[in-house]
Length: 133
Image 1 (cartoon, rainbow, N blue to C red):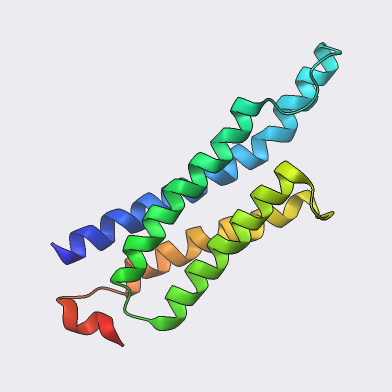
Image 2 (image 1 turned 120 degrees about the vertical axis):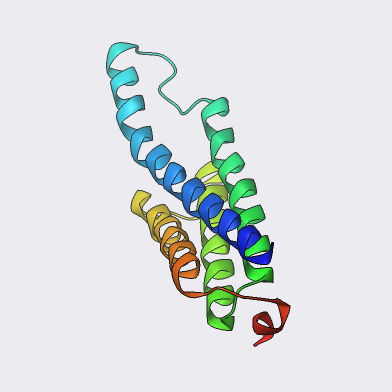
């Protein structure tokens, strides 16, 4: 059961982060096309920005359950650090707290995908005792 839970949250986390990357990559193209065809409403609609927060919630859930059973402490730290950077990038994009490159959001999103895939492949617990180191 433990391996299955870890497997599912790693797949969920990698999948959600991949969809987040696609969402982030598609945004400029969708709204440039819209701005060129319609002169009003060139800003990102609120419903589109809520998708960002949906991905944050899903990735939080996946990382929470993955890190509960991760076999490596550095992986836990890397996943939570990446998630924190992703949250910061999304909140910053909404409120424009500091000027960041649009490419900044890709770094933590890609890191989350890679870390979940690494955990899926190399960090498997047979029982609860291996997950404590």
